[in-house]
Amino acid sequence: MESRRRTRRAVPRAPGVRAIAAAAAIFDRLEAQHPNAWTELNFSNPYELLVATILSAQSTDRRVNDVTPALFRRYPDAASLSRAQPATLEGEIRTTGFFRMKTRSLLGMAHALLKDHGGRVPAEMDALIALPGVGRKTANVVLGHALGVPGLPVDRHVLRVASRIGLVHSSDAEQVERALCALLPPERWVRASDVLILHGRRVCRPTPACDRCSVRTDCEYYKQLGRKRAR
Image (cartoon, rainbow, N blue to C red):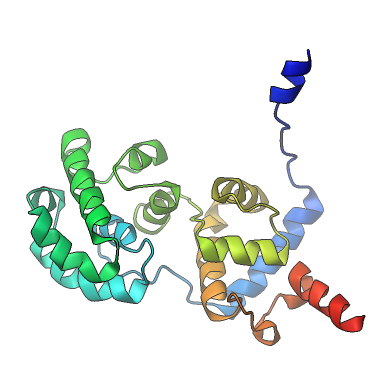
């Protein structure tokens, strides 16, 4: 009996009506502050976004966008990418960082697309995360921005901003994804991630600019700052 108690996991409670309404109001204001929020990676099809998102790990979107135009001209699809020479590809993506690991991921991904999906990017989470170099964040980026499937990518900005505001209370990306998805209807998931990312880049940085934040009156972090100042 004791061992059963230790292994049993608590089922997270579904958010209540007030929490859902409060989250909707917060995201309404964030969307108004960042009306053009969207991925800043340049792409024209799901394959290009998949490549760009793999390259964006531990890099900036600007640096990736500097590399991908030439890369997409040389490797316009999975078939051409699968034939790339590793040493050549490493040189072409070197400036994005971790180029050896990313080269292995890109080549593995291209071969898997050809072998399992006829060269096309699948529109299912399980199929995407089975590809080399693809985790839930990358899969959600591609699903939501290129394939029209609701997804909520969670990166370091989403983790930081959502936690500071008090929308979530976890540092685990998958738990945060589930918690945010439970607060919002699927049609808002992609946009919610995009506004949190932009807010994290422009306003709620590691050292936040709270005076520029449209949701500071609802932000747990800002309220804590106020209490500290009042002491």
